[in-house]
Image 1 (cartoon, rainbow, N blue to C red):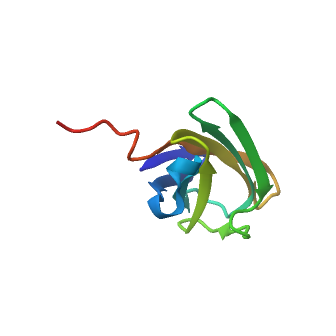
Image 2: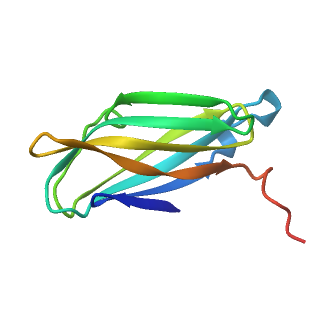
Length: 130
């Protein structure tokens, strides 16, 4: 589990390699990642947009931007959280992701809540236990 905090917004990420969705012989490796966003601040916030930087093991970088997450722009009152699961395919057996969510406060001001960098590892990349 990976986590970080920006201005009272706690973000936790748990990646999971999807063996059944992947095809290593075809160079297709797929991960799901579950994210929980918790508002530990004092004001209501809305997640407006996201920006991801996805890097494979060859150093290729893909930038993904869009409104909200999984078709939603959740509003989080103090103490509330929002959890969702999404996915990411890569052409290599490992990589990592990082990014941020653009958050809007009640007064209209915005800030970027950092998503912690997390690794995308397959069972093939893990060292064998002897």
